[in-house]
Image: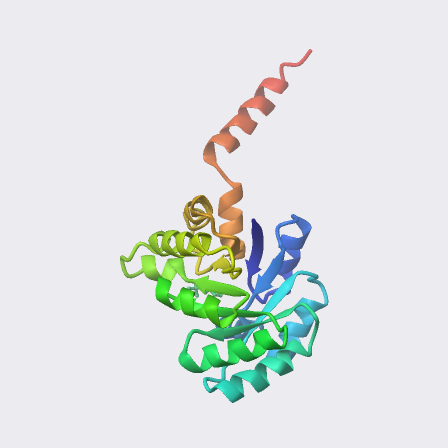
Length: 214
Ligand code: G3P
């Protein structure tokens, strides 16, 4: 199991690194925009502190444009993974990157059929968005279950599932039970996962009783 930080914020990423909970980082245009930096600067700054995979998402939607943009990002550092939205042109670019040994992550996956095609095209990762499905009352974890079942049926299907769009701890626990490989977690959800009211209550009680030590 791997935990990535789903952020382009250096402080949030460093917090994950300090906890040993940052095997990699995923970004997307929304997260990059929040930094106020250029795409290249934001990705360079992340690669300066992260040794694991750093996912940089392309904006182009034609195969040639995706390839050119992805090659630019891949030239920033050796740990760059080119993140490509699921689409016909994107699959063509994935195949080209796979032939060149450049890692890719096909993102914005919302169906098992999309995940199958992305994996067959040669994607290193497929990235289903559980939170956005739950947001429209479609059980996101059922998608993870289906993709994991299909991938487990075919050992040569080496693509790893990155669970994304994680809104709460159950978006980690349930996909983990289904056998997902990687969880890209926002800083706030990492914090939620640490805490439990009974733990807090127990610590307070122990400290209170410790005052009675002779
Ligand atoms: O970064 C990809 C994914 O985690 C986006 O999540 O919350 O925008 O659906 P969200």
